[in-house]
Image 1 (cartoon, rainbow, N blue to C red):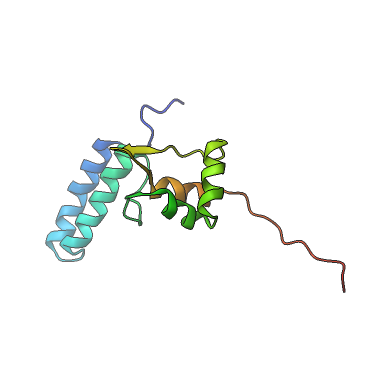
Image 2: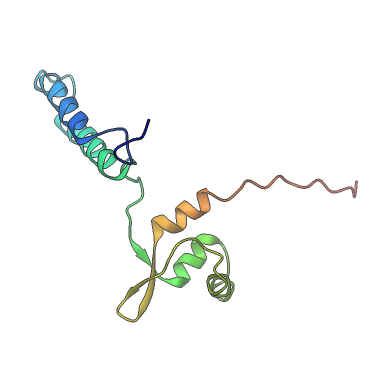
Length: 121
């Protein structure tokens, strides 16, 4: 079956859930801020295919990106020049910036490395 959108949660589903939750909010079982948070996440899920990120998205410079990745600034520049990163630069005027969420997503998708046991016992 082919999905029409990126997310199986459609805008109509979000509207329906909102209508179903309204009486529960009016009775005070769910607080208004909790309802607002639920609906915001559902709307974002229907539009983007993912929940609202816990990390506030912002643009970071090359030094901040290198620090986030745990490499030196010069090594970061060499890796970027060689095309090692899937995230793209954003030009803000003449300044090079990256979305912190792109860098974090790259980190989260790195394969796990098994620790190597040494034979020097």
